[in-house]
Length: 445
View 1 (cartoon, rainbow, N blue to C red):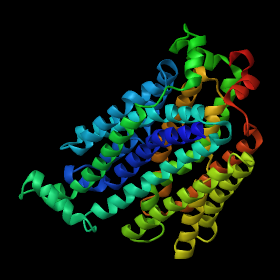
View 2 (view 1 turned 90 degrees about the vertical axis):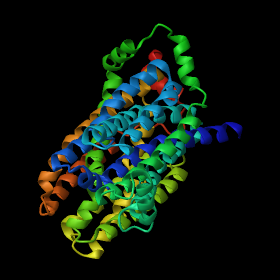
View 3 (view 1 turned 180 degrees about the vertical axis):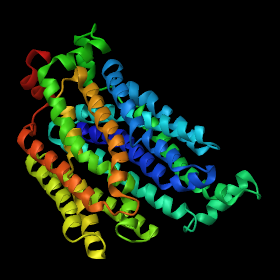
View 4 (view 1 turned 180 degrees about the horizontal axis):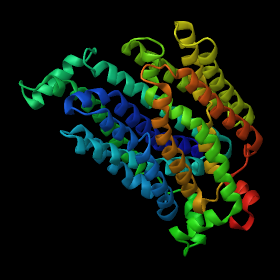
């Protein structure tokens, strides 16, 4: 019982990394217009902010660095220092008075997010009991939903016209004086939202730096004292089983994430332009959708260690496909179609390929390059998602006129994720990491 409680506590502490990842993405997206008005930014400027942020290139670069660092120096090394980098990036955003400062803040925050993700998924898997590994990964995923929920609420309450904007105005004038321009006052709401991330990051850093190093990492390093970072990279690329596994996991995650990344950044915009609802309605729909994701993930966490992984995987992608089929059949011009789409996409988020990518990605590689392999895949996925986000805007059009064409593209991507996942899903439930490694790699493990 003591070990079960210990793994749950460490899971919650490490899962705050996912909260900070999703929170940074949503906080950045929700405040873009405010920063644009305050700094006089063009659409090109906004495109650069998205491109190098936690949603795209920044996280991609950070992941490939952080993954191999976690395999070289340990998971605890990442937990000890990485969130200091995150807090530095958030502080830069909070204090920004020009575009270079804002861009630097987005970049530093994005890199830190990427550095933390492979180490956190790896640590959760390595510190979990056999029959709780899936549950703990699901808890980690729940924090990815709770982050946007809370940040969306804060964004709505603190935004100009929001319930707490009077408090924002008072704080802004207290800091900047009574003569502060309107745009400077308005952007203070975004500064406060990022302040909330700074506070959570500080709490998470204090919790994570007190964690014990992964026992599996310690055992692996004691056996291979001379193995270095370059050696582990070579082993990863020279082992055909590892390469095949990278291709499998990158395929199911990339094809799903190309859809999900668009939804994460453009969803309120889609609801407003294609669905015809107000900004406030779009934000509340987005909030409800994240609440559904958290609820379904909680259910998944109770089932994933007891039932077929393939069955849950199929359920999630069928819900995802059904959501986009609504677009090409009913459409989202009316409330019925719009809500059906929002609810179905929320359901799929609670049983999505990201859960299984995080679970299988931490199960299917030996400890010596487990985090590095995940970092490599995360780099591929987030990097290509950044490019896809640019392509999507051209397909979608200025006012959503290309939404149906975009929907067919999304359906095709989700079908690939479904087919590949069903065909190649591994059977790892009920097995220890050591057993899985031994079965797949033999003496290498």
